[in-house]
Length: 235
Ligand SMILES: Nc1ncnc2c1ncn2[C@@H]1O[C@H](COP(=O)(O)OP(=O)(O)O)[C@@H](O)[C@H]1O
Ligand SMILES: [Mg+2]
Ligand SMILES: [Zn+2]
Image 1 (cartoon, helix red, strand yellow):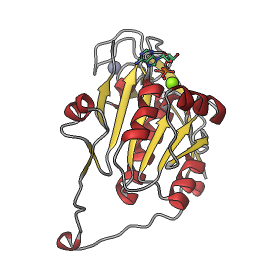
Image 2: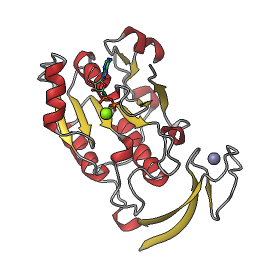
Image 3: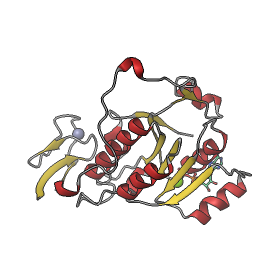
């Protein structure tokens, strides 16, 4: 029961249209529309292990510490007093600006009461370990996984139940259920919404890293800005 569909997507803002448009009516950019073929197999779209839960609002226990301190005062301030538990935050910035380095330092310093899981689709365990060594990070609470499939990531999150997760980067992740390439607007949207659901249901706090690029065919974090909390690093 695969549903095949062609849509045109604005690479600047993510606006969708059934036909190609020269000018995006949503963000007024020119020549930003490109074609995406979407094959979404409904049969494999069951979200494994996640079931709907209806409960009394009054029975929901709110944990004492609803925000994590990242270990960086400036960052905590930008985030309004720390990382909200169960929230999804997008860290955007140009390639090479220091996102992965900053994130690893946050993994080391953040005051979570649970496991930290660093998922990278960009670098190997060896590369991250070498960076950790350079930064003097020796932390038994940090787990690493090199992975790009959202289906595998979802399973791992359900098994490991980490408190804090890093996804480096959104552009390298993909869903097996979509035919569009990693980094395309459809994939980036799908990945983000799937991660958001995991965060909410499992109370996992997540930082999603996104490259800001000027390349029109790669979905920049701007597409996601209306979906998640965002902060950019700039030097
Ligand atoms: N705060 C910093 N000051 C100086 N150099 C840095 C800093 N953060 C990262 N770097 C260096 O910049 C380069 C790119 O950093 P990286 O974290 O890989 O960036 P990104 O993940 O944004 O592509 C690395 O060589 C790293 O050692
Ligand atoms: Mg990086
Ligand atoms: Zn647009």
